[in-house]
Image (cartoon, rainbow, N blue to C red; front, side, top):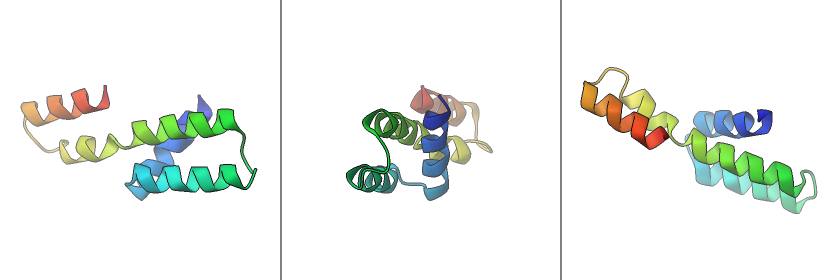
Length: 73
């Protein structure tokens, strides 16, 4: 679970799940992380992608907040 959170945080900072997945794959190809860790990080990267609509909906109306929540779910 911690590894998924790490993937989400890194993606939230970079604001690009594609870049995060690229970094993860490069680390995996070098043998620095194993397959289980890669899968967890990629899952976290996909979850971290949803931070962009959540941030943009913070000062918006109810419909925008609801849309951001559905994106997260």
